[in-house]
Amino acid sequence: MTERASFLVAPADVPSLRHAVAKIAGVGYSERAVRERLGLEDLTELQWHSTPVCRAERLSSRDPLALAIDLFLLQGTLPAEEIGQLFDASERDVLIRAGLLAIDETGFARARASLFPVGDRLIFSDHAWPGLPHPGYAIVPPDQVMRIGVDSRHLARCTLRRPFRSALDLCTGSGIHALLASAHARHVLAVDINPRAALCTRFNAQISGATNLEVAVGDLFEAIRGQRFDLITANPPFVPSPVDALLFRDGGRSGEDIQKRVVAGLPRHLAPGGIAQIVTELGERDGEPLVSRLREWLDGAPMDIHILRLSEHTAMKYANGHAQGDDYQTRLNSIHEWASNLRAQGYVRVVSLIISLQWSDAACGSPWDRVEESRPPQRTAGAEIEATFRAERLARALDSQALKQSWLCRTGNIALLDARVLGSDLHARTKATLLGQALTIEHHLNSVERDILEKIDGRIPTPDLIRILGDLGVDEPTAIAAIRSLLRRRLVRTDGPPSADFPRSDVAEPRAPDVP
Image 1 (cartoon, rainbow, N blue to C red):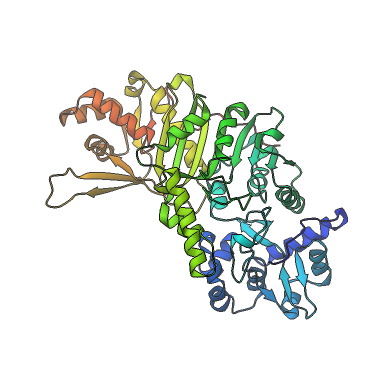
Image 2: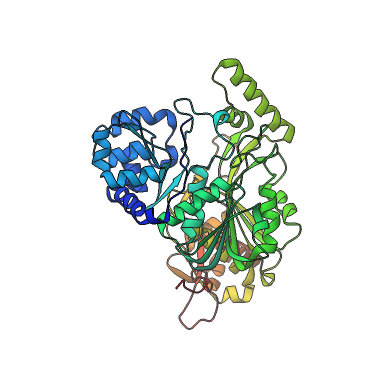
């Protein structure tokens, strides 16, 4: 196993270390530039077995950006002359003292930690593939700090990015979500039960210059001391694992040991008007809605729940993806162990999710929940998730009389897709997708909802639309219900004359004070 970074820096070395990291950023080492250089649509596509091809085909021109990618992302080894192109002697020495760089007796250099680009931010963590050339979790220490991987990037892109008074990041790992929140929250608390993860987060905070970020070692909410937070993020261990090998990964045989405690603690620690956002995986059983499990964990707390399904894997595919073993029989035994555990839990598939929760508004009726599917976002989608909460509440809060006093318009360009089965008497199905969004959600429409979208041209008074639908044989209650359904799904929004006094669905709710 490659020797790991210490994530310790002497106070006197902090300015020099920041300068060395800025030097890496200065050669163009950002998420977009690295992705384009490697020919990837998204950095989540980068896999260890593709590193030789990336190095040979995409980094053959050994300019400083190529060298930085090779050293700090692909875990390559650089000769002395290439290291000299990246760093001068003082920069190299401070990286060595900080435990980020190692140079052997022949002058070849390797990184002792990876430097992950997240947007324009750079975040250190343990290597993505600790056991190269044969990476496997069996040889990884239990306190390994999680890399900036698929789940980390999905949560980062789905988190609300607006001013908050306070933010809490549970199971913080490298501190990625705490560091991102520090840019728009007045105070951030990052918590992890793994002392090495807390060390890594402090290290990243020092390098980034974040002075509003506090780090605590503790077991979830035990380190909180009764505080409430406007934003709570969590990337907890969630893998339904038959082994207990990694703190950042394994969530017990059900995968729920940690994440259900996170959800159960939200009613005591989420501030009024705040939001909690969790990236996770849940095993799914046929006939059991995932939301019912969340309601059970909340123990009756009145919270609205939005579940975004990003991907799913059959139980067998999931078992095969997590199995270990270099020889055939060992790997076969591991697959059997993982598959048997999933069967014992009753899981037929494992689903990757972003779960967002807010306190319910009693004026809008009982707590609601919604499950939507989307391809994983490749850009920020937090505003769209927040708009979903607003739209749901507006559709519930507007009584029929207020709705009939409004005007309606489409929210934006909408793609309609009709699906018919030729030679069958099945009714045609229509799907609608709001274009230009980070989330690609397909909404199934009934015939009345489709008629509404097609009849709206610009802005139209709701009474006029109801009359048009009446001419098509649609009664008023059915028309009102269809309009509410489209409002909930943000396919239409309320609009009106400047003098009209009613809520507009395109106007944001009051937000937290600006961060000074």
